[in-house]
Image (tube, rainbow, N blue to C red):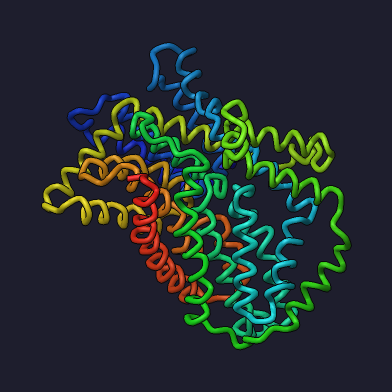
Length: 485
């Protein structure tokens, strides 16, 4: 069979119960309710890992077209079902994942990591900050947080830990490996907050916010980065210190780490031509995404972020840094485009059919009965949204299922739309800290065995509180200063 029987039966049963057993609520159309039943079934299948998420998404597209919940004619229904593939934000992430292949293929990502460790790696906490800084630099052009934290940074962590004989199999993980693996992981959610292109679901958030506000709020790459840079940097600066006190490494002085990194750099040899090209393309992407040429030379130099990503990939193909075979082998990129298109399509039509507005009204009414002002009411919604991630193994599934309704409800209870949009966006990455299954990076780092389950969950809960407080208070002040609310 191409599916797991138990998770599939559960997801199908849930969908059938919603459609056939639960009466269609007043104010909701039958088509909207049927789409909700399919949507909840799809999210349940994703959570239960009934099939790969891309395969589930293909089935979702087929179901939307077959049932004609969005249109009366077969041709219009399939156009609606495939409409997600026309969303530029989906292609921004897909193309950016392809670009990030260049960081791994050329070795530039590892070179940057080893370079920082060579400079600041004489103390364990210095290595921690080197890992965090490497994450930050790679984040804008590595929209797969799993590739960044698990594929680029984690192998460096394991190499350093091994050089100090810090090995879980020997019971010596406490020497340095436990601390570095936690810093490795907790850098990942913070850097994912800071750029639209730092994790795959961020463009989905941009899209959901725009739809919820009738495009009155449309977060650009620059606006997002400017809003998140100050609280993000403060969170990134505090995180290695907090983890250092929670789980102090036995080895605190590490002069060998600097020598180890220098030796690795020596083995890599001088920077190659392809690495230089990759670095130049990296810089060009950041300049264009930040809108610097347009600021200096006028609006004719403005490019859509997705156009910029296509330009970057084109340059890498023209220069031979990447080949078309490299692009074709980027399964995660094509997979992301597929499932993103399906989930965005379903979320879009749930909104168009009025289901999101109805559910937001239910939330608003429930909160309203508590008699709270907008500050505690919106905080309650924010925390309920974020800590619901204990029940999710996919940030995308969580965001698709809950973001719009909670955001609209927050605005309805009086929260400033821009402030609450940025807080919800921040919480959508901060929630990755919580569990060992929270996002793709977590099972990779946790699976290396440096921490126990209890240590991981304790660190995750503490860091979630620290991070959300930083964004609520410092972020709020910063966004007020910027005139965002």
